[in-house]
Each structure stands twice: as structure tokens, then as C-alpha cells.
Amino acid sequence: MTTETVKKQNFIEKIITQDLEEAKVQKVVTRFPPEPNGYLHVGHAKSICLNFGLAEQFGGVCNLRFDDTNPEKEDMEFVDSIKADVQWLGFKWDGEVRYTSDYFDQLHAWAIHLIEQGKAYVCDLSPEQAKEYRGSFDEPGKNSPFRERSVAENLALFEKMRLGEFAEGSCALRAKIDMAAANMNLRDPIIYRIKKAHHHQTGDKWCIYPSYDFAHGQSDAIEGISHSICTLEFADHRALYDWFIENLPVPAQPHQYEFGRLNLNYTVTSKRKLKALVENKVVAGWDDPRMPTISGMRRRGYTPAAIRNFCDSLAVAKTDGVVDVAQLEFFIREDLNTNAPRAMGVLRPLKVILTNLAEGHLENLSAAYHPNREELGNREMPFTREIFIDAEDFKEEYSKKFNKKLSPGKRIRLRHSYVIEATDFVKDDAGNVVQVNAVVVPDTLGVDPADGDKPKGVVHWVSASHCVAAELRIYERLFSVEEPDKDGDFMSVVNRDSLRITTAMVEPALAAVAAESNFQFEREGYYVADRFDHSAAKPVFNLTIGLREDKALNAG
Ligand code: ATP
Ligand code: MG
Image 1 (tube, rainbow, N blue to C red):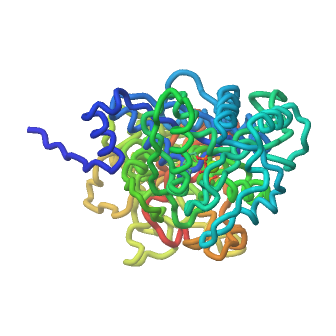
Image 2: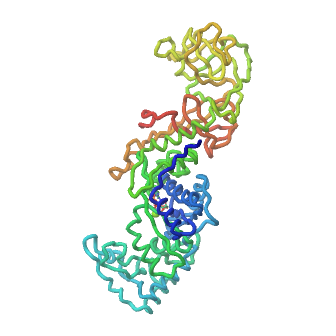
Image 3: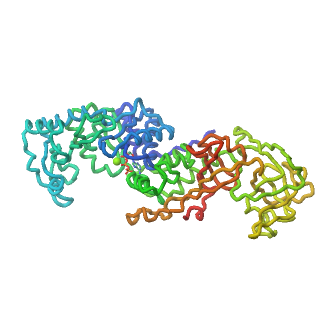
């Protein structure tokens, strides 16, 4: 018998189900519409999972469309990173990548159509004047003195705008809707403005560019988008979205639905703020492992499956909410615990000499990469006369409190290896223990000591002669406060000690692993081979996350 938990449909799934049942929609077509003005962040991951997920779930398709109507802020670097991020998350867009700029000719023609219908006009008010004429929430706006220009005059002026005959800001094309509308978005919004800017897709073809509002719904109509899903801040724009769709000869009638943005505590999720962190060199770049960008999370060692599981766990609601970052971390740990191979790295190496082994003793022990995932295979662990254990695993004197540690006369088991018993130790002039002498308890590979003196502790170790030095980049949260932007000054609460670089002695098998391989360093945490800097000659591992939720680790 199979028990299937039927997940409750969210409000968008309900709408789609009904639209399909009533044959209002034949095929579900969604889109993810990023503006290429920065790298994608965890909030975008939610939108990606929602849009691509709905298409998958209802047998439809999802487009990737760059909303590229602001050329000055946009860049091909962002276009490329966004494509890579979507693919890395495991989604495939339908057909070619699309750009709003693919539709600039059509949008221009529709602007002319509105002018011809007497529904758009060229307005010469300065931006300051236009603001004044717009009124406010509780005060209706005033009609622009240019509102009643003739169709012929508007057509001629708009053509001159296109030809570059006017300066930026000197005039704009506005829709003629209602200056007294309660919804301010309907107070004759700008639909085309002059921008003498080079565009990453269209070059210098245009010096006028459509507004987001004029471009978005019409692009949806051109692409036959059945459900245009965006975040709540666009709810007030929906009336305008619908007005354009009703007043233009568009090939389809798309509908916009809004859901709540994802916000995470201890995090900022706004491209503008993330950009400020990059530009002020608070982090090393957009893909710094401390960044909540998709490429940052990737470099940190978060996996696509874990991010998708997290996104799927979030409510799709009509309100914004703040999600505890621990919820994201839960899914990271869950995935890594199940899938990451285990390995050994010693962060505070303390040399142990196994005095009953011969000089040059070398035994290649075989160790499983995962306790319950046989298919992950084994690696060789060279066992030699000199090994490193973690300094924390040795105590000069035995005490009950530390009965899982090595101390003179006491035993521990080396993970995947023998039981050893310490005899004495050596200190340096400063009083630090720098060497421990111990003996291997014979015949204890995989079995308890015959004399019944079974050790309580199992510790990680590496061969001192065969280990490899690796750089470890230990990351903490970038913000040590729950609401970094509470007082509008997130820069002042950056955790400046959020990166610590240290060297660890790791088992030799780790040098050879591919970049981006995830591991659990036993008893230490989850680490990933750095995407760019790791090599066999110079292994570099980033701390992905600690083994368990540890407030101290992340308190900053
Ligand atoms: P930001 O405010 O970070 O600059 P944005 O909304 O301007 O983000 P866009 O590139 O315009 O970024 O967004 C692409 C899509 O991702 C939009 O549909 C947007 O609604 C959605 N999105 C952006 N941020 C979030 C978020 N925090 N949660 C959910 N969806 C988001
Ligand atoms: Mg935006």
C-alpha cells in the first residue's frame, strides 16, 4: 500500500486547475522575467521554482525572459550569470532565451496605435512638474497642459523622440487614462522615455525605451503567457497591465497574479543592497560564499536540490513574510547528510607517534565514503607511524568530563582504523603539547580490544606523512543581526569577521576531488571544494554549514 500525502494546492495552483478545467486555458505557459541588473538571489530562486515548477506540474512550459528596458543598469555579465543560475538550479526554459528587447519594434508600433486612438500623448512637463501634477494618495492629479495635443502632433513628436531630436527628460510619451484615478498608476503613466543609452541587445538602434509597465503585459501577450506571476509590489500595477491588454490589439489576454516575496532573517534580499556589498568590497564578489545570491550559495556548497526543497517548502501566499534562515539551513543539512561523502580533515593538527609501529609502516585502510550509501564507494586511508589528530581530542590528564578523549593511559578509536592508547607527551617551551606518544592496540581493526578495555571516543585523524595541507575558508553569517536593514543601514551591521582562513591537514584522497564536490568532514562540518580555486596542487575547501544548528557558530 502506498501512502501518498496530497499537498494542499496553493492559491495559484487552484486558479490554474480551474482555468484548465473550464478550458479558459489550453496550455500553461509561465515565465521568469529577471532584469539583468544584478545576480539572482534566494528570493529569485523562489520565483524560479514557482514559475518553472507550475509549468512542470501542469504539463506546460516556462520561458526565461530578460526584462531589459533599463539599458544603463544592465549588463551581459548579468545576463550570463542569470542563465547559468537557472540551469544550475535544474530548470530548462522553453526554446531560446527571450528578451523584452526582442519586442521593441512591436511595442513601438503599439505605442503609435495608442496615439492614433487618442490614448497616448507626448508630454513636455519636466519630471518635477509631472510629479506635482500627479497629485498624491488623497489628492487627485491635474491634467497635463499637453494632454490635448492632436493625434498628428503627437505622432510627429513621438517620431522626433525616436530620432533622437530631443534631450533626455525633455518629454515622454504618456498613456491618457485618468489623472483623478484612485490608483496612482493610472494617472497617465509614462510608457516611453528618452534614454540615449547603448543597449546590450539592440545596440544603438533605440534612444527611446518602453517603461516596465508598457512592456511587461504586452510581452506576456506576445509569448502567450497564460499565468503571469509576480510579487506583491506589482498588485497596484495590475489595473494598468489590464488597461494595456484591453486597449491594444494584442494576440492573447494574459492575467497577472501576485504572491508574497521571500525575505530571510539575517539576510538582505535586494539586488540594490547586494550590489552595494559588492561595490564597497564588503564581500569578494557577487558569488562570495557569504552572499545570498544563487551563485554565492553555489560556491558555499549549497546544492540545487536543497535550494529547491527549501523553496517548495515555502508558502505561496498573498502576503509577504520573513522566513527563518534556519529553515533554509535545515534543507541544506538534510541533503548533505544524505548525499555528501564523509572524509577526514584535521583543523588543529597534533602529532601522534605510534611507537609500536616500524618506521615506514604503511597500511592502506579502506574506508566507506558514507555509512549507509554503499554506492558512494570507498577510499584508501594510509595508516602510518605518525598521524595527526585534533588537538582538542587530547587531554594531558584524564577526567570523566573528557572520557571520550585521548589521555595518557587511555584509549580512543581512530575512525576506520585501530584503537590507540597514549603513553606520554612532549611540550614546547610555551607549554603547549606538541607531540603525543601512543601505541596501537593490536588486532583492533574493526573489532573491540580483546582485553575488554573498549574506548569511549572515536576521533578523526590523517596520516602525517601522507596527508595534504588544504586551505579552509570558514564562513559565518554576513550579518549578525536578525533584521540587518531594520534601521535602513545594513552596512553598519555587517559581520566583518565572517571569513576566517585556516589550514587543515586532510586525507590525500581529497586533493584529487573535482571542484564543487561536497563532503562532510567528520565531526567538523560540511565542506565543498571551491568552485574556482580548488586544485590538486592547492586544495581549497569552503565551510558550507556546521553539522548541527549551533547558535555560537553563527552568532558572529
Ligand atoms: P530586487 O528587488 O532584488 O532587485 P526585483 O524584483 O527587482 O528584485 P527582478 O529581476 O525584477 O528583481 O525579478 C525577477 C522576478 O523575481 C520577478 O518576477 C520578481 O517578482 C521575482 N522576485 C524578486 N525578488 C523576489 C523575492 N524576494 N521573492 C520572490 N520573488 C522575487
Ligand atoms: Mg525589478
